[in-house]
Length: 140
Image 1 (cartoon, helix red, strand yellow):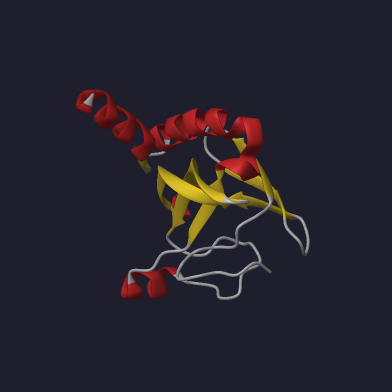
Image 2 (cartoon, rainbow, N blue to C red):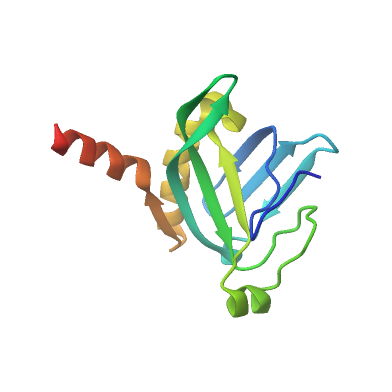
């Protein structure tokens, strides 16, 4: 199982998301075994898209990632299951980090679909990559 820090859930090598009107299903592959899970919409706290950097061979490159924060750990294999009560007490919520590379060409589509999904289901959504692009344009 991949290494996990704080409330972060395992990272997967490749991920396929199926985003419907009221549910998100994920199929992911890792070193150990494939994971197939449907997330409970009521347990999703917020969805954030943020810029990040990743190490590629000899340099860092700018990229993006999707963060899905849950009120308690979804039903996927993890080292430590965090209940809703523990999360509320500690302020550390389980977070699924989905890198752009793991999604491949579908990443841009996932961003749009997650935005609509969050709006439909009253889930907090923020796209920090758009904010950064606007700031760069106004600074020029």
